[in-house]
Length: 504
Image (tube, rainbow, N blue to C red; front, side):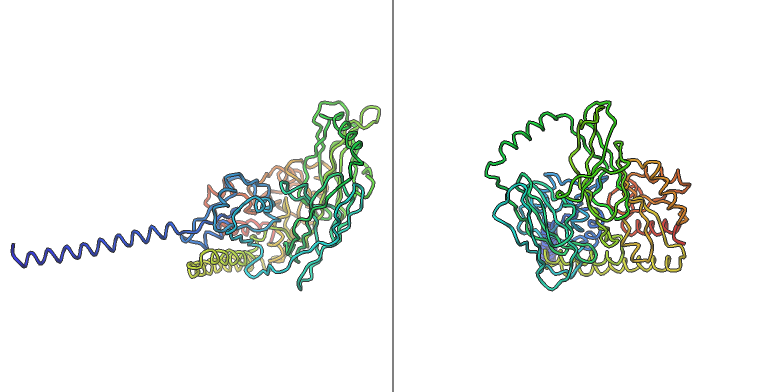
């Protein structure tokens, strides 16, 4: 073989080997990078969008609350819990929005999980804590329990709530009439847990105590009473009354609308509704509430309510369990922080910090992506400001009070048809009251949240001669959002367009 040809072939073989080696190395590195992506789970749509924009291709981001599901009342499945147990980061807004996160955190077993509470923003300190003092070794049924919560650190917040649950397997429930650092409560029959939570000036959770167990020990002295109680309960089995229409909280001036539903067939129609502020008070009958429907305008204090059904001889036939009607004005705020384009920027930065903590090598990418998305949010804020700044009519009416942050940011007045539940249609008297409000404020449109039922808004609009229109609160990944490929920025611009019908 000619020596020149042989040398040429050797050179070509060497070059080919080098190129193949480089390609193999690139493929291997690409495969390694793909396998090294951190796993992130975001609670619901806005948190998912914010996280995707910050993470880019650096992380695998999953949406937990998927199409058509309500972020408020979502119940994580066993599959969800398993996924969070395997994740590196979990992103959510706040317990006031995603009520179920407290239960989720008590269930998961992932010591390495980084939790991003986006409502905290990027600089929230977690050094302060709540300590509960005054817990006795045990209590007897009927004893007065007195506890005091203390906030450590330099913060000066005095907006408190107390919560109770039977055990760690149950959800926390707000206790009515307990709005200060002092907790006073009559000991019930069974042991239970309490927790003290203090809120900041934006009604966001600032700090909370560890669960405190209150042990009830009657030394068997009430055993006979318990047996009698069980016999009494058995005698009324099947006569239970449930109450529909209860919201998680109300504001002062809202009209609480509830409906009692009997679970047995009966011809009895004589009802009474009773209320009391707490267990230390006697039940009081509410005047003019003598049907299965309860309509009551709140005065600013939380209370308990129950419905009683009487037979034809005016004897108690059945009664419901009491329900807690929680009044929480939270300084005209709400948990929908992401609807304020300025506060949304803080949420994005909080997410950025969590991703950097989980993946320090991706710091530069996360910072660049976050900065780019924040610039888009700044542009959105500027659009809202310039569009709305010169409007003379600055009020708008909504079916549910979800746009408080947006209203405060741009000096608007949100008027909510408060106390209405999608479970219960408004009565003629309630519609008449809303009609007066519509006339007073010269309201052309009643807005309802896209993804939620519009039936109440349409009913009220038909009776009051107004129109209905959509505002996106982005709690639900709805069919309309998917069909029109609307992301956060698009939906917020649609909101701005819709608001101009009322704000002009």
